[in-house]
Image (tube, rainbow, N blue to C red; front, side, top):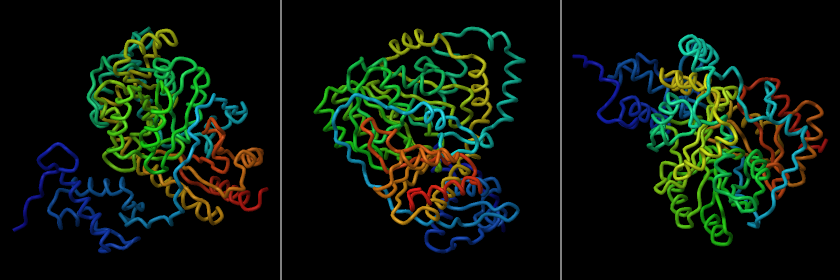
Amino acid sequence: MKSDPQPDVAVGGDEENTLYYQLADKIRRLIQSGAFEPGEKLPSIRRLSEEHRVSLNTAKSALALLEDWRTIEVRPQSGHYVRRPAEELPKLSSTKPNGEACVIQTNIPTRMNAAIGSGAEPTLGAAVQSTQLMPLAVLNKSYQKVMRDLPDACFGYDGVPGHEALRKSIAKRGTEAGYVVSPDDIVITSGAKEAVYLSIKCVAPPGSIVAIESPAYYALLEVLQSLGLKAVEVACDPETGIQLDHLDHVLGKYDISACTIVSNFSNPTGSLMPEENKKRLVEILNRYQVPLVEDDVYGDLSFRSPRPRAIKAYDTQGRVLYCGSFSKTLSPGLRLGWCIPGRYLQQFQLMKLVVNQCTSVAPQLVAAEILETGAYDRHLRKVRSQFAEQMDDALRAVRNCFPDGVRASRPLGGHVLWIEMPRHVDAMQMYHTLSEEGIQFAPGPIFSPSGAFKNFIRINTGFPWSPFLHRQVERMGQYIRTGK
């Protein structure tokens, strides 16, 4: 007698306890054991349902999770296949900064800054996503709804903390990143950069020293420079992020006013801090009583489910100022970010009042609507696998077009790729030459206050791969080989 299909969710609240997760894990182990070969077609959803005695929805969810893990891929009108692993590039080595505090002089030429940050489609330069990956229909529908239902609220002033509806929605989502906060703990900002700027301004007086990752996002260096701060670069592993022993040494050597970290899928390396490192980091910073400005704009773009925790999840003393944004997930045009300043809430709100009395209300209501209806989660499930595929495509192109000896990061989320070229290649000169041909990328030295990483580049993988982008990578490979 045939058994009835089991329910979709097993006892327990965690994803690991769901039947679809258990089925996905079982199929993954079968693939790892060689039961299914790379390129082999998997059984259909109906067959999986019958063989494993689960519902069709459970089988479908299991396959979706395997896509998120980059274990399988979908071929239109054909089915699900075991993904062929991309040919590996040599791994990057850990960075070795000199550990000396220095005055920040970014000196990024205006033309370069404008070109890298322009987001012209498609581009390898700006760390942006294609509009094809934005939920434009959902955004349009939500805008129409809030304009129809709440016209007075859309065009009026709001309080410094931001609209309550959005703060409530963000607070609910905090549990996915491992932290529990009240809506009153959150301040809405005009993008993550404003959140980071105000956070640093709260805790680091002019002339003081901030500990930063090496390499660090060049826009952060511009913020530090504008605030009259010095920086000391801390060694980082391209896979696991900041090296805690070196950070401990730096904290003991200097009077550090703050530390800044992109915890999940750092820009430019794509590194992901292990959970035990995040916990130990907070313990080290608490010992020295140093606040941490955490930038987690890429956390929701993990290629795997569930998303990694924020460092904020381990914050026991309120010293983590957590900064998030919808720019990398919904649209940069919303100009929406937020901060959870912890013990620095009052100072942060005062700084926000001085710099920008309130963030535009209409985008806040739109974002709240998208979060509350579940459209945000549906969108993430769709784009995570797309970003993973684009990262694989970019890595494959670099492997095929660049000469032997080139090394690259292997991010598990986000959409930036960090590449080390042979020592003799000058990334700045390469940029100046190829930008004249319309080829954009970010040269390594702009990610260091000391001008390190002279033979490194960062490329954006936020666009579906195309012959146009492939030709640009081919031209870059030609330059690396010939110097012209």
